[in-house]
Structures are given as structure tokens and as C-alpha cells.
Length: 289
Image 1 (tube, rainbow, N blue to C red):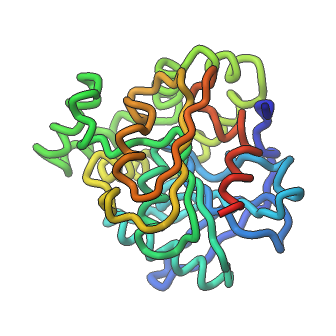
Image 2: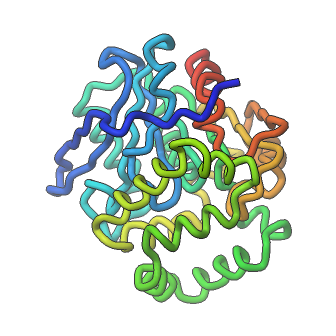
Image 3: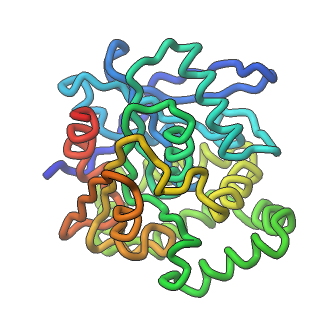
């Protein structure tokens, strides 16, 4: 099993100018000639938290960890949707001449990775400890998450404004830590992973909370593509001991049945930190597609 090894603190930083004048930024690890893997980080995190840096050269892969609009160094887009996000990334793919593109969506980044698959940008995608299609799993959600779905339905703009007023990096870190599996909390406390996650949250909120609030509103809505309509190969990865309230409440089992040809791996003894505890396994399987 891989050990928890966050990406180096100083990845290569890049940005591309979008047609409307905004910037889309990312952080990069791995050989420049490597096959591109677009990493969609978790809630509120910028791309400064990559993963798998030590294994990328041997696998011939290059990770581009994306800052979603309003997070990190990417210009905020108050009208952001899954469709505008996919269009932004499509421009990056074209501008950089990326070919045979793969993607990894972690936690709240999972539906954003699905949007890229739905737009035809990917050869394959791995959803790792990914947020499920929560509305389809409503009967399994904890009351707090179900209440957020109701709040978005009742007043989406008001929900977004309220989140933007109260959220910050410290608050979100407390939520992550409080809902993490014991194994993940131990990793945060005893390895560099905890500091790396906090740094990614601080960088993610560098412009304020508007980008995170918009992401949360979007991610609590319908998925960008019905799982049944996905045609891109999908590999679902979950830890059997994952206790996050916003990942998959059934460890991806229902989602795996809904996605044509999906592969599901549930790892015993693991929580939600799989990009950092099992990077070689995730990336090796993804690159084999």
C-alpha cells in the first residue's frame, strides 16, 4: 500500500486566459510530456494540493490540479455552472494541446469531473471518495445534508449568499476534520497531509468564499450528466471506513450500478484520503484504460 505523501509544496503554477478575459489556473506535477490527468480537488481546495507526485514519472503521467473559478488563482465566475466549467476546461485542453486526457475527481470535485466526461473531454475518469448523486441517495443522507438540499431548492441564491457570508478556510477544515474517518484524522495529525490540506483550503479561499459557495450550490443540484448516460469509462474508488457525510453513503454501490460499465473498488481499512494513501493504485488503473 502507498503511504500518505502529499505533493511537493512548490508545484509548477500555470494559468490560461479564457475568451471572456478570466484566468483558469492550475498546479502541475510530473513530466511535461506525460499523459495529462486533470485533478478536480475537493470542496474549497485549490490545486496546490496535488497527489501522486512520487509515482507520476514512472507511470508517464502529468497531473494538472485545477483551480475551479473563484478558488485559488482562477478568476471568479458568478454565473458558473457545470456547463461553463466544462467550457473553461475545454479551452485549457485546446490551448495546451492536451491529448488522451484522463481525470480524477475527489470528494466535491467528483461531479465537476463528471461534467468534463459529459462534455467529451476525457478518455476515462476516476471518482475517488467522490460525492455521490446526492438527490438519488436522499434516503441515506444525514439530516444536515438533506436540509441543505431543501435549502437550495427553496432559495438557491439565498443559500449561496448565506454560505459566502459564513464560510472560510478554518470553518471548512473543522467540518472536514469532524467528519473524517479515524484513519484520516490520524493521517492529518501525524503526516504532512493535514498541513497540506489546510494550505490548499487557505489558498482556495484567497479570494473569499464566493467561489466555494457557488461550487456548493452547484454540487447540491442535479448531476451534470445522468449516471445512466455516461459513456466515458468510470472507476469508482471508496474506503470502506469513510465516514464523510457528503461522499457516497453506500460507498458507490448504487452509483456503480447506474453507470454503464463502471468499475467499483471499495478498500478495507481506508477512509476518504485515498488520493494520498493509494495514489499508485488509482493512477495505474486509470492509465490502463
